[in-house]
Image (cartoon, rainbow, N blue to C red):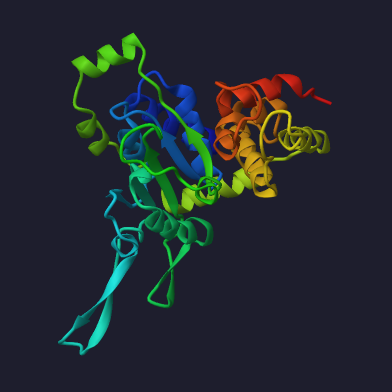
Length: 306
């Protein structure tokens, strides 16, 4: 019960900052509980950065924010060695990536070279600078925001980079009631600055261990394999999901189950997290005009629960 109270207070606090988006907030919390990196894709000004800040503060994690631009260099992220005359030696000055949460703002405005510098950090939880490998803090999350690809000055993220994000979510415009509260209320930045941390790093890691202990039955695993096989059939997508994506589905569904107060994964959990977990890894086949998310929804309708 203690874990449930913690999770409820986490969700409640985040819902006070980003009003009217409980499903998206739950996805974000599930993503971090599953130990995954989060990509928030939307038009500018709907609260992507505010949500990322609020997540870091609520989870009680030390964070740094980097505004990605076309001239951002890999060393601007990872840090550099500077010769210090007093010590008569090079001394490493760590970059902003050495934080528990890296807010990569507008990640798709940086060049592919800088984006690839993030790959090692996201996958291996370490960075190699000037031939030396340095571990990153634990836990380590990347929460990245990006603008839609049709905006000026953006580089599409390569598939290998997208595959490292456990989930991609979109906030969308607020409804009328939530927008009125925004227009009439306090500045969101002030609200975020005042948020208390509700977890310690140890408590977060304990919750992540609880996520991993959530049970998956053989029938549930059969269902997930049926969904993965459907993505590879050529009917829905140009290329199917990788085994890494399959593992991501299970991790995200386990976190969703824990948030729902259950010790086992139900098919509903898989269905709830599937579009956010796999749509960014897939290219739709067939009918023009249907996006990957809509295609995942159509596939979900077509694949029976065995």
